[in-house]
Each structure stands twice: as structure tokens, then as C-alpha cells.
Image (tube, rainbow, N blue to C red; front, side, top):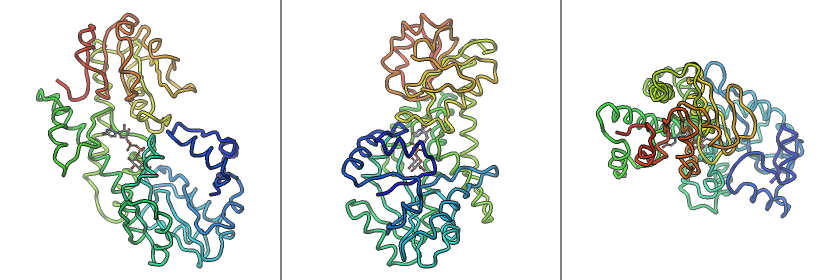
Amino acid sequence: MVCTDVDVSRVERLAGGQVPIVEEGLPELVREGLASGRLSFTTDNADAVVHAEFTFLCVPTPQGGDGRADMSFIQAAAGEIGPHLPFESIVVNKSTVPVGSTKVVERALGRPDVSVVSNPEFLREGSAVHDFLNPDRIVIGADDESTAIRVAGLFLRTSAPLVVTDPSTAETIKYASNAFLATKVSFVNAVAAMCEAVGADVRQVVLGMGSDPRIGSDFLRPGPGWGGSCFPKDTAALVRIAEDAGYDFSLLKGVIAVNEEQYQRVAQKAVKLAGGSLQGKTAALWGVTFKARTDDLRSSPSLEVAARLRERGAKIQAYDPTLRASIPGLDVRDDPYTACDGASVLVVGTEWDEFRWLDFDKVGELMVNKAVVDARNLLEPATLRRAGFAYEGIGLV
Ligand code: UGA
């Protein structure tokens, strides 16, 4: 396996066995591949593909200004490798691309003998290695059966169900899957808001709902809203794809709107617990990544909440176990306690397990007002209240 990237320093680090992101099991896998000689890294795209029967495209498709996916990286990569691909090889597209993009890649390659296949990826950050090795399904979108069979041969070691279809359907499966998961989270966040209004406990509601196998308990954890490098851009892109095709995906627009409201709802809870105003006060923020077990800050709900707290005049002192660099607008601290120094409210923005086991008497002594907004329902409310904290979770009585 030869990996190529335009980022020289990234390639250099990887070639030296250093993985530049937090991802469980990945450093071991990379070092093992390097040591066995089965894995190498280069910045020479032509060199990387020249002997490859299969070339995987895994380039980013960020959100463009109009909500549509930006295809420029994938087009540039395809244009560059096109002349160097072996005769009748296969380009497998793993990037999340708008429906119909296989044709765009085909055009950019300029190689009628090379087949382009859509093979969307469903792995989650934080458990990417596990998800890759234990997939729930393999989706292959190909224009002809013989190409699909060649690609399917790559996945013989998994027992996951194989969905062989056309490229547009495969691309739609990817968007629809992420949009559905985002819908589940927005739904439970809306139910949590309702629980607060009627005096119900969302944790029990989810337990009751999730036992029905038709509903399932996964992705029903209320929180500060969904974020990350995929859900926000993919839901926005799907709304645009539908719009361009003449369908108003109003359900998904509602899902996105509920998510925006959720950031606001968490910020309002912080204002309330800080005594009605955050003007000139300090808010502590525990966790800034978009979820635990990653160092990814892209579209982090925690940062969205922080921005809304700042709009209300708060100064933010933040701590995250993976945060090494400074972030504009945040006073980043080295440990969770000093983040609480002089704070009028503490917001738990990411569900890092270590936050459960901290000394809350010490936290309380450092704060000027003992108040916690637990946006991940991570802590034990009774313990916090016994320690003299005002406590608010999401959808709790
Ligand atoms: C997501 C999908 O889960 C993967 O299947 C997909 O392959 C990936 O996007 C992608 O398209 O590349 P990921 O972005 O790693 O994976 O994050 P998730 O674990 O799905 O979480 C997304 C957001 O939803 C996070 O902010 C998380 O905290 C939030 N969430 C998730 C909740 O608030 N509650 C839940 O119950 C689950």
C-alpha cells in the first residue's frame, strides 16, 4: 500500500511512524505496516499510482460557500493521477461526493479504460480502526458487474453484507446514512427539550424507546448538538443536492435548525446558572473536541457553545485532554481545575471520561459560583448537588 498526500510534513511524519491525529490503534497499525514494508508514504502522486491495480481517492470534500460540497480537491487529484494509472485499473472513490460525482472523477481522469467506483466509508473518528476492520456493510457503486466483483474481492476477509449497486445509489447511501444519524441526535435533543418542559427524564425515555429494536438505543444520547467534519457538511450538502434536483428536503432543514438551537439552549442554561448574565464573567469549558476520543475540533459543538457564551460577554477558560495549541477566543489551560479558577459557571462540552472522576470539592472552591451545565449528561447530578453545585444537564428533571 502506497499512500500519497500533498502535505509534505504530514507525509514525512507518517513515514517516520508518527500519526498526526489522535486515533486509537492507528499508530500501531502504521508502525506495523512500515516495519513489514507493506506500507509506504510519498508526495509523488504519479509514483504512488503507477503500479496500482486499485487507487483509493480519500481527499476532503469540504463545504463550499453555498452548502454544496467543494469538489476542487478531488478533481485536482484525479487530473494529476489520470495519466499515470495502469491500463484498466480501478479508481475507488472513498470521499463523500455529491450524487453523480463518479462521472466528474471519470472526466477529470481522462482515462476511458479506467473504471471509477464509489465505495463510501462509514467509519467513525475515535474508533476508525475498529470500524474499518469490522464494517457493518460494504457498499460498492459500479457501472458494471465485473468491476464491482474486482472491488468486492478486496473485502473478502469481512463477513459484512455487501451492497452492490450503481454509483449514484452508493453516493446517496452515504449521505442518507449520515443525515439519518444526525436526525436521530436532533430528534433526541428535541425530546430532551420537551422533557425539560414537562418534567420527564430523557435518560429513562431513551431507555424505554431504545429497547424497541425498530428504534435502537444508538445515537440517542442528548448533547450540545452534533458536529464534526462530516454531519454538518454532509447534511448541508444533501439539502443542496435535493434542492438542485427539485426536492425540498424540509425534514433535514428542520434537523439542522434543531441543531443550531441546541448550541443556543446550552448557552442559555449557562447564563441562567451564572445568575442571569455572563457579562464580564468567566465561564469554564471542559472539552472542546467535537466528541471524545479524538483531537478533532472541526465544527465542534463545544466551540459553537463557547462562541455564544462570548457573545454574551463571557471570558472562556478551557481545558481539553488533547488540546495542545491555543485557540482564538479561548484561554486554554493545562488542567481542568485551573480552567475553573474564578469561573461563574462550568460547561461540560465533550464527554471525556476523565471528567467524571475529578475532585468536585476542589472545583467548587476554585469557582466564584458553584454551577455546572453538563451538556453531555456525563456527571452524576446527585453527587454534584450534594457538593453544593447548581446542576443542569440536558433533558433531566
Ligand atoms: C460520522 C458517522 O457516524 C460515520 O459513520 C461516518 O463514516 C463519518 O461521520 C463520516 O462521514 O466520515 P464521526 O464524524 O466520527 O462519524 O462522528 P459521530 O460519532 O457520528 O458523531 C457526530 C456528532 O454527533 C458528534 O458531535 C457527537 O458528539 C454527536 N452525537 C453522536 C451525539 O450528540 N449523540 C449521539 O448519540 C451520537
